[in-house]
Image 1 (cartoon, rainbow, N blue to C red):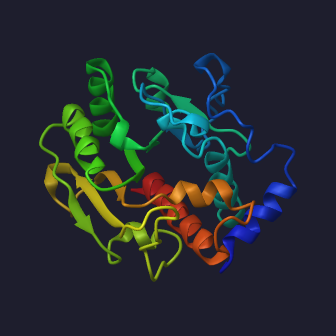
Image 2 (image 1 turned 135 degrees about the vertical axis):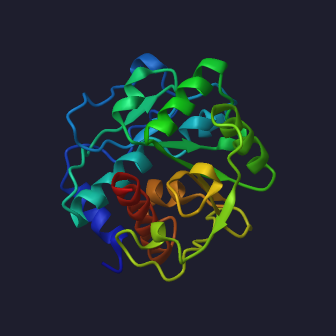
Length: 246
């Protein structure tokens, strides 16, 4: 299991679904979510925010390829029930989010939620949801935390290290600090916990100064080192297994 990215290539090669469909700028009506069937479907949050030229909307960075490639790996290495080949995109006011225990937010430095979305996100988190924030750097952390504060006031970020169970949920990852593929920053991981107690349930994970989805997106193109892409897949697999079992 050392080179998970090679597994991704093999699994993708055997699939009729393309790893990337070029839909990063797609209008909401073009999204084709997976009908709920009880299996895990990678689900991303769509929000109003800036566009970055060819990079598309902020919420859509690395989508859909990252959201398709990671579940393929999890399905290949585990016995978890995983939907592959397609993923979900939801706004936070969509009641369908309550059927999905894990949501992913890209570029939360630009994330902004409405009062209705804040209420729904807070209810979803309290009901057992697990939120993953990825692809943001520096002072963008302030905005990410401000949005969470609107949904669940009083949660404080607590830095977590390699000894936290999330980093050993499926794969043992010796070096959790997978470098940001594009920016010279040092990754820091924060958890937000019920009652601000690290011994209680983690409700939000923040990959600060990191961009794991960039590795997932481009793993079948050879843009980044195989070893780093594999470690990014291990972390992503751990996150999903942790979110499904805790």
